[in-house]
Image 1 (cartoon, rainbow, N blue to C red):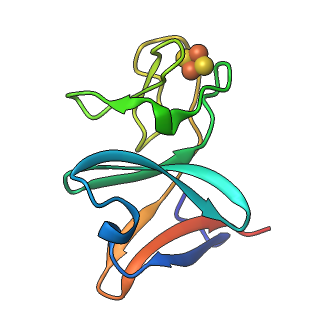
Image 2 (cartoon, rainbow, N blue to C red):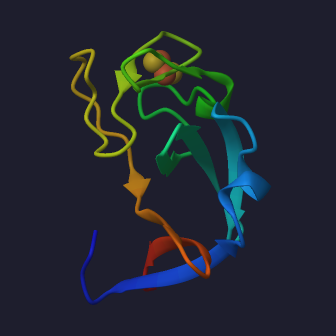
Length: 112
Ligand code: FES
């Protein structure tokens, strides 16, 4: 994810503007592209809007006690920080780097 084709884009001044709760999911839209944004304490992530299995809307799922993102449709579980399908079905969840910096919250997008 951190290569010369990554374009960092500021998306907020503070994470609380995007996700005010300590453990929550939401929808983020950047450059017309919908994504899922999540927070579990100090851990934040941005991943695909839809599940790679059958298109479940991941922001309607939940974050389990281990920090995995659970799809609302068939309950497949993903590590949203690295995309691994931790429940073992063999899917991969697209994700993007997100950073909280002194000057705001930034997301790393691929250059077009
Ligand atoms: S659509 Fe997400 S697990 Fe099936």
